[in-house]
Image (cartoon, rainbow, N blue to C red; front, side):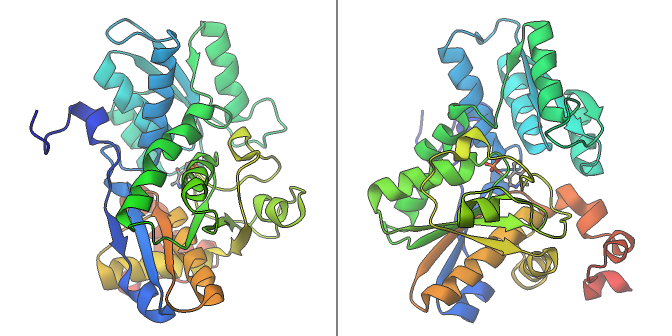
Length: 334
Ligand code: PMP
């Protein structure tokens, strides 16, 4: 096959561009680079984890391409989209358990691509009705594969094998720091392991939304939710450390309020034509903080996890924003 042709959905996952973010770079005197994960075929960084988890289940013999198989997962949406698209490509079925509070766009997209979607109330992890427990129970009852992204090593391994080495190669080993928010922690842990094994001085910084306990965990060793809350989706853990993050080589953390993250989301879109979701805003805001702390001349890489269109009804909805006490971008005010 010619080098520029890839094989199907799986072949199109990864090898995303690393985009120089002009405004952030100029403001800090650093190179601030965003890994364009919104360009994956399912639209998010989670395509990599979904593919890695399904391929690991195939290697273990729990799934066989072409034979009926069911994958169940609890997800904020993006992993569900990745799993459903890989399942469609390989002849499996997906059952996606998701908190009903997630964006209308992700819910509609999952239905559109044929996921068997089970919306559940948004409950804390300590409650057995939480979407993660509900998905595990359902998989057990059905004898189906539970993707188990929070604690499945195949998630972080996918990033250690692909995202991290891509960042290393794209910067010619020049990366000085990496910032990333965590839902499962697969992206941060996998990239951190890949970069640290090549250059131990690379600074790994966890970016955390308000209301999450991972900032305190990095700073003190104890998970303690910070004051406030966030409209971002797919990131933050109020009360637990997912298995993926245990033992991950993390140097520091930044706690980022939504207003600071959304300023980046809106500026990236209106001044640079780069349209990303809220978690990418948290990541870029953290990269700017790290760049200021390290001083000019450094190369900071972060993750542009998914695209803004997935959150149109929230991040670009003046009524919703006003209701949350958040600033409304000028071009939406009219
Ligand atoms: N951003 C978005 C939009 C996501 O959906 C997720 C995954 N839930 C993340 C960031 C975090 O990625 P990870 O699970 O690898 O920590």
